[in-house]
Image (cartoon, rainbow, N blue to C red; front, top):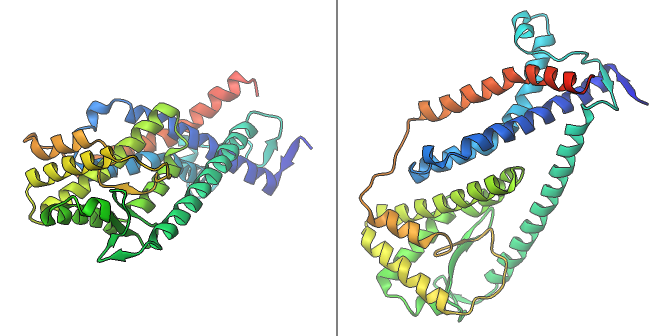
Amino acid sequence: MDLFFDQAALLLNTLSLGSVAFFVGIGVSSLIVLPKRYWYSLTPARKTQFMWLTVSMPWALAIASPIFVGLSLDTTFPSLANLMHWHHPDVFVLNSWHIYPTILLLIVFSVTLVKSGVLVARHVRNFSAISSFPDSEGILDVKEPNAFSAGLLKPKTFITKGLANELETSELKIVQLHELSHVINKDSLHKLIFGFMSSFFTGGVRKTIQHEMALSMELKADNFVVSNGISKLDVAATLLKVTKIINAYEKSSDERSLQCGFSSNDVKVRIESLLTQHPARSITNYSLYGSLFVISLFCLLSLDTFHHVVETFFNH
């Protein structure tokens, strides 16, 4: 059957519109992220918010666009019909271009979901295995020097005896506070969710935002240590020392992509952030959320024009 009518057509048109809006959101979000000079110098907290809002935009557009179109079809909101509408919502032509965005999104979504499921299963398995190691006062009886947090819903900090034996008491406290920050913020869970949402972006953009999110988490954890009365110089010195100790040891090949390691991300950038006097740039909530809201609203109102252009191009 090449034609669907009424409720079936409405459902398929809704999926098609949501899929188109999603890919438009991916494109616009990518354009926002690419000029790094506008957001790179933000504070870690603001950069984290910015990244979350950026990867959330396609999902928000995919949900909001069918709602807006549905309201435009309702006679209660006649003014919306002049801004945004969808032709023939009660008819769906199966062999038209409308079906392809939905199929593409379903394929990408399914593949990404499977990959995330495999990542979760691996992380849970490794977490269970690590938790079974004997420990004394939170120190794992493991020769390999390492410090990290792991666990999704109930995360824990892990510091091995191989690392603890190389550190002074004050240095060990710095490592513990850093990893405690990851536990409090449930960063492993956030890395999983953010990794899933950012996986729909193209390679270069995806790598950039995933890298910057991981770095922001580490910077926030470093700042947490400083907020507990530790000097920035001591934190930087400990970070450098731990990195040298860990790098000197032959690392295992275990997958730890959801773990938050003490010296796993951009050590040089983190040390510079601790020691330099250049204040990070901050913006107000009104500026951050307001600008992205305006961009999202513009995308919503542009979907109708995009729809006309595509239908003209395909002579549909």
